[in-house]
Length: 196
Image (cartoon, rainbow, N blue to C red; front, top):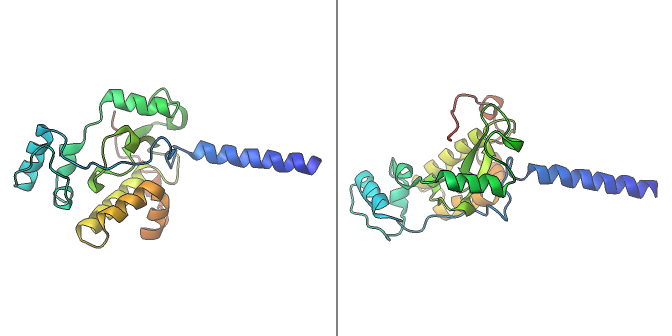
């Protein structure tokens, strides 16, 4: 009887451990499964991408690899309102940045699971509060993976679809396979100012 209670207590503790890890270094897949931007969403976005690529782009055109690989592309598509950010925090039971698992000097960023530089969307299905510090795998570490995958995709060494799937399903595993163990100095990087 005592052994059964001990095993049950250990199982509950392990489940609590893993549940609390959700949304710290990995988002809850039910809330944040990832999402990609399929088409140019507005005339403003089209004009911006046209200016960056030097080609005429119109609202409704499909997002292409050429667009994604053009320097400055993410400036054209990044658009997450404060209201959406607040919904993201609320969906993870946080009252905002610097609360709950975001309670640190740098707090969290509302991060794109599939990064914009890999064709990710601004939809709430692609957003979660990711800490800048306090986790071995944090926003600074994920940024390294995003940059690495973007370079590999644009060089033709990894397909865009594969990179999107990797980062959406297990970005930590992708980091370990492709880059290795996060450096302590990168994992605790303090230089980046979090976005509001």
